[in-house]
Length: 393
Image 1 (tube, one colour):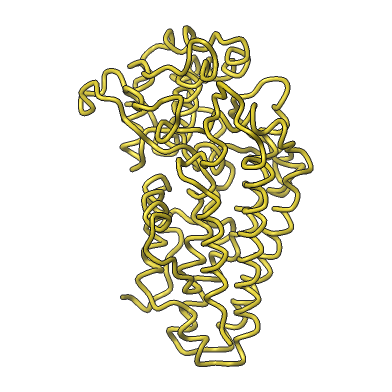
Image 2 (image 1 turned 60 degrees about the vertical axis):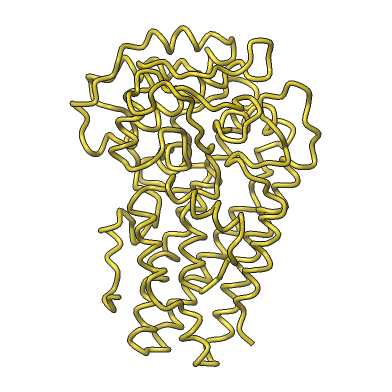
């Protein structure tokens, strides 16, 4: 275990924006312009149920000319194309497709391998790497950001964008907490309680900002729109009643034509709370939930999960703060803000998902299960309890 300050840049993390990349690439280079153009038309085709033939006609994408900085954009577009193809007719007479054509499946698996993640739409592709500033030098904040790729055309387009963009601003707010968390751990290792206290105040401020953004979700994301128009597209092919056997990735040799099951996009793939849990010593007892959260790390950007593991390899801040009663107040205030964040998430899970009956033939699957493929009510309640267990008295 090193006592040196962790180098955030080495994990692909920004000291300013945390896990959020600064100004993601908006378009792939010229060789991929036809593919980009096709994806721009996808929302309208999905609305008219004509995306399938268009997707199948996309020329096979040769990834050899991709620059390293284009991998995430390529993964985002390919995973959007695949999810749209599979789920386009879910809930209707035709039902979900159980295959991804080779022209999409092969490059999706290839670029996913390069990035070290499963070949399906994840939180990075859907949120972290899927936004742009409206005013180039303006803030990364609601009102000055928009999404680049989307599923929904017409009704629900605003709600889909708002749902994603609230997460984007939360990630931006969390940046200072990530950097301060690393410095707080260093201060604790060096036995500098005053320096540690200063960093805890910064974390507390960032958490308050995150919560202030979180409460804005209902402003432009209506639960009555979210459920039928937004949520279905981020459902994966694991524990999804529309794809009970999984999905075949055509042309991918290692899968040998066998259906694959991968979890859908979910906010639980964000690295913020796992990182903060590791910093503050919030312990999740062994359970189906903790196993699920560990599994979801495979869907995070490789550097992000490595940073979480590096922090977990160090003594949690709580053990140091426990020796310095003057730090209890600000430490506990941080824990309370984490608890508030999770409480709001739990409330939204009810408002946006669980309180609604599952309509017959819904493409969105059961409302008692999250898009990651697991029951969320018990899980989120457990999170709340375990967060408060970290308080010091």
